[in-house]
Length: 296
Length: 296
Image 1 (tube, helix red, strand yellow):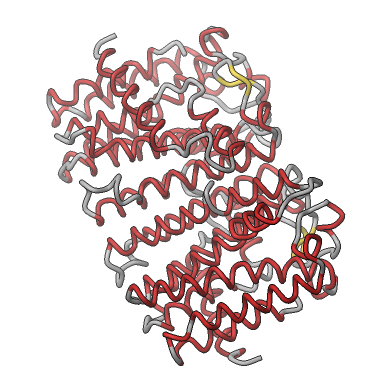
Image 2 (cartoon, rainbow over the protein chains, first blue to last red; image 1 turned 90 degrees about the vertical axis):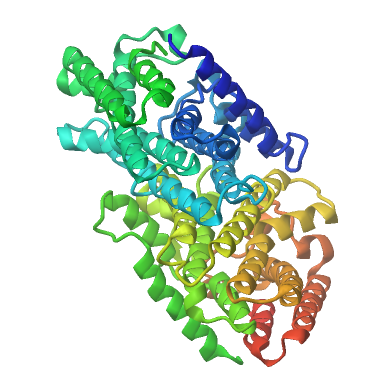
């Protein structure tokens, strides 16, 4: 894969920063901070933070301006997984091959660890030391964007419609609502925040937004496809679980071949949107290809 | 009660603003927005937002500078109640005499409604229109304070220690940790944010912080006492539930008489802290008395 080194390197920088930004395990209440760290360091690919950094670098930003927001985005993503896995929600015992948070720490602690990760994400986004290179007005705009895409009109909204659609016949607009909100929203927010913190102008912000919309939807279609044809060991979770739950997916609604076409189309759309950004956007192009071609 | 009209009036302003700020019930996903609104409008006393506004007015601020943050604080408080009532947590069927969120909307929706309220609180705190009178650096500081007091080192931390202490013999420092974090944190944050948005100087901020610390702890002790001697109908929830659960409380650890003394002492401390603020702090003094003397 092209730019593999770039992606591995940025993901490693995110890991180091997360280690620094998350409350220490020996800080009271220890059980809570352990539970928060358990899921943040459970083998995530750091896709959203790496997308944010790559978007910021594509418009001339430096990693140091982006790292705290990248970590906040990963905390937000992790909270959503912890709550999604709960018995009352998807009731998953494993994620990325490891027991889910509530299997290790119990349901109450998992709910609270998710709440605390969500809250800590916003604290970090407003942290004065982390924002020392960022004008307050920009930091505020970043918070508004992330909260908007994460909340009831974004990711949480997508979760609700996804949940309510289980076992139901749904139409294509509903499927697109679920996908653009549940997964697409945080991916789009990541590149928009990258554009803002990286110091991009309005045209660059618009180009990255088009990239983020297409890449976000492509990511979820690829996810749906992997649930049908993926390798259980490589994915670290059961395949076929969407079908077993009667989940609405692209392959279920369009067939596998057509779903693959749609993912490839969106990847090309995403890459095309980056044209005005030139060479500095090469890592983002590689990420768009990775999103569609990945096997886990 | 003195200043009853002031308090009723400010609470009504908060209600009107909450109605405006919360996503409409007919907005998709409707079930989620209904669940969010159900708990926000389930008869809360609006104590935290009224404290915030009273603190802001005590240092010369206007209601219009404070209202959005007051609403965000109430959303945060409501999310904590919705999650606290969940079967995996306190497993409460009623709150303020009405069925709890998960009894009406189901457990999954209640988890997500809580998540969405928490997220919406931060969105509102960063909302450009709501902050039009507030310098961005101040808005950012407000977000940092609220997130710090709401997160793993604040309210959520207090929840965890409270939960882990059920049925355990705990010492006084642990009890104080629970009380200052679980309930005290958001009350302290409310008056600090009031001081900041109201345009208070450093001395006023310090005075209001001392007030908030004492009032927050007094509130929780009064709550513990009400759980022993309160009127079930007036409270809208079962009394004696703390004891039944083996919860650590002031009356359990110190006895009822000593707990009452401590609450009265803290009320006096809170009122004393307001001396430098003079007459404009009269509503806050009334609130301190109300916190300790209330019957529901």
